[in-house]
Image 1 (cartoon, rainbow, N blue to C red):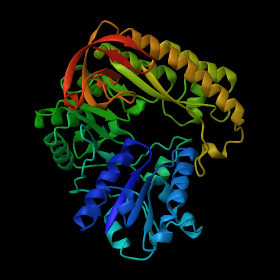
Image 2 (spheres, one colour; image 1 turned 60 degrees about the vertical axis):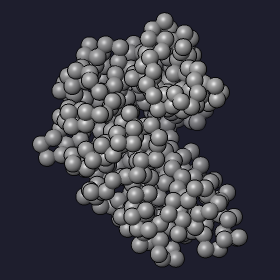
Image 3 (cartoon, rainbow, N blue to C red; image 1 turned 135 degrees about the vertical axis):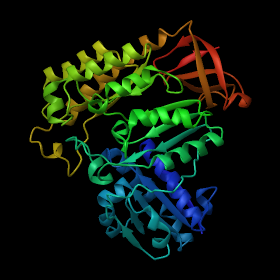
Image 4 (spheres, rainbow, N blue to C red; image 1 turned 90 degrees about the vertical axis):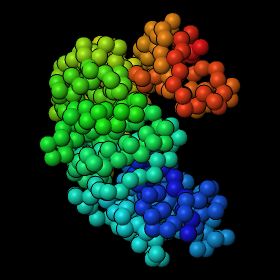
Length: 426
């Protein structure tokens, strides 16, 4: 039996798909080279925003026609969306045969032997010990070090679809990183919903970073996402300040610059506390790239509170920000708030946020002109096969002239131009 898997959403889903591939391969299934030759279509899904769910449903609708010429074809819905509404979707005759939640991948091969069914129970102890994912990337690897979330931010569905926090044993993480490095993957990113709250026995997250650098000397670049500001300890700042294999970049979601909004979001910090962490990072790691997530139009957000976020953006000057309008998620606390904002206000505020960040990012990128940077070349440029692209250590996309021989290599280049998203180098 051949399977074909499509992945939607965050890097955690990418890592989960690699885990699923490992499980299915060990059970005797074969990964199809393309969708046309597959006997089973697997869709690993995201539920963070409604758009992500609608996108998957659209894809399944487009592909279910294959069952007419291939009646034995099966379609499986995996991951967060399956966890949230899998049972309902199976009953709605959308062409979905299986729904499998995030803690039940070990049982997937057995389920696929049945005509139809679901596996959606949470398992608060499942962290897939002793299972190594099959890394699908050619140059960059994502290594899950913990699963779940205990924070229950009022807007976020993640704790309800991924369960409580549990950390992966260090031995498994070490084997995973070594496997990636053995495949010449020079850029490794550690993953967790709240990666810096990792704790296994007596091993804290800062200690994990130190041990990995010591135990895998061949490792060249080490990153991690996503960090929660409340868990960004002085010890972690100190470890980052020592440099080494740790890249000069952190993704630190702020979400809002208004203390009132942050409180309603249940973010467990104030803007002043967040700013303190930013200052500590910049003091310990001069030139660090700081990226963030921001929400526009959160329920009850006044114009004054929105302006506080814009003011925070100007004060901090993030290198880049992923900006989103608030997306109501059924089952979360914020979905019950009575003061939901009209869609037009959400979109208007989102656009203002994007426009401001674009100005800041352009200024930050242009400040790199004339400077030398190290680029890990990951592939061809989107615009031309005569150019290649990759990331700098501080997580900026860089483009330079080159051919296939450059892919997978580290190059020192000089920045000659910059856009609000790309360093153009020579």
